[in-house]
Length: 520
Image 1 (cartoon, rainbow, N blue to C red):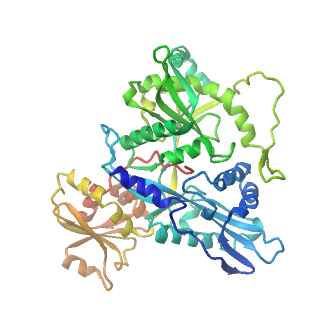
Image 2: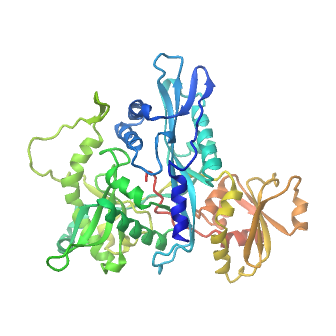
Image 3: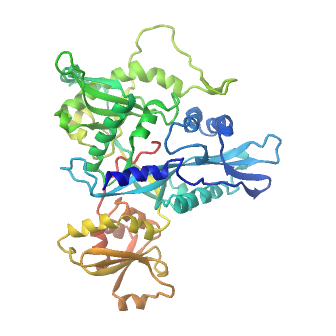
């Protein structure tokens, strides 16, 4: 993939370059009006989200109003106000987070080249909330109608996703896929047996908070290098977004992440060499959300992982204890409109001890290389992944977006490298009209077109089309590499012509998706 195209993809979702999602207010009845948020809503909406969700959610809202994030501004929020009340309060709100995803085929020997990927704009639905007395009135559906239309028509996004209440969003067309999170965990006791070895490594590797453009360039490059080697689907974070993570987030907000540069000492008189980075989660005691190395520096995964494990207890005592107090503190706006964090802290200056239940979590998905670099006894706890919920409103648009990837997969297939065949995919056995047909000629996808009006089953054989009938949005599981077509078939989620299923199994293999990032 041409880096210039990736830069253009990020530019297309930047708030200064895109249409607004709800430019005109909408009367939805009973005195309720839906509109997009404005800068003047900052304090009220932050307070609303702090009450409706939790205090850190209020601080997160302040982050999105401060103007530092390249894709998020007040217009990303839709709000419903009750105009029948004198104060016209905000009683419901939803936001969309525009991002850029990459979709393709990883290569373990890649030097970071993105040639095997295509980019696509996506939006994440977030901060869905309604005051209790206004619930069960269909307001979430009205919000999502606005956000979905914006994503599909204005951003040309083939996919939307959310990480919310399990199964709730299936009623809005979302399917539970692909995997989200997961990893391994341990305690001070599990690293205790190796603490001497770990400490030796730790003398050579130090950690400092990331800051400035140079660190943002380093983290962007190393993050892409790790993702392109392991992940079929991942969120690309560019330099401007990393700078916002470094400097633009309200401290102790839900979206706050601390990014640490791993560095090793060089010869006397020279600056330490950056060898990798870690991103620490805001919620858990010691949760590592990302961990990547710059292979060019020569550090091994074993040395780096042991150094990380040695550092985590001091990260907790020196940094996370105070952060946790601020994270859980009540949300209170001052008279100047700035949020004040009430903290009850000990007057003693002594470094806090690790609690008896202290544990660390490597929340890096199931496939990260650090897991194999240390003894299993050090990270004995398995954290089962959850799932994201994804919506693909137009399978045709999604398939057209990923044609270069489909062609590379056909070219790598011995069986289908020269195949000529058309495959129809549908979400219903009874509906064959307006369904995408993948036309493959001589081993390449020539086009993806909707089946014409009046299409019936006898027409397919006459036109050389083989069908695959999916059970509704189970098709998302195949498109996003969450399950193979054979796994979906085993679960009763698809049936169809044997050739159709064979070709789909080549076009859509299992894919790793450990680096889909929600708030960044």
